[in-house]
Length: 200
Image 1 (tube, rainbow, N blue to C red):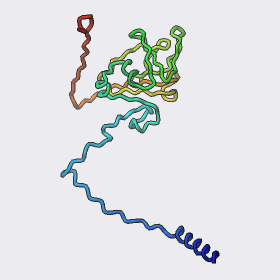
Image 2 (image 1 turned 180 degrees about the vertical axis):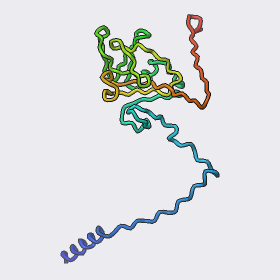
Image 3 (image 1 turned 45 degrees about the vertical axis):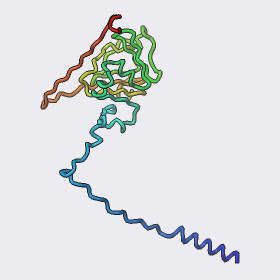
């Protein structure tokens, strides 16, 4: 009796396992109204930042690198006009700047610290595709980050695309391409107050 019950249970299990699975028909989806009747919302891809850190245009979220990018709108909103603001808003980046023309970046704790030894900087700074010349391990050029296309800070070794001076990262400042079909103007003003009377 026990053998018959065991055999029946095994046969039922085999039939249940080998029975084909039938797919259900999906319910019909309602058709979307035409764009003339109901205009579609703005495409989300239009608001994505497109970077060229790998020498080709890619969305920032698709780049397989640790990268922070700022568009001109974000630079203006955050009040970034120079290297200090970029270092402040980029994770893992510290700027050593004792004087105006002395800019030494430290990224993820990697930096050269021989000010008089003419050591190469560990962060390559590029304006468009031109590397900014360095003296020792400092970046002398201090560009004003206004009316630029975007700023990209790539963290980690970037020697494959940006040379030996990018042991800990690369900073790219990309200027806007001229638009010969449209006329536009913009301006930026800074206001500074000094003296003890200005804080009362």
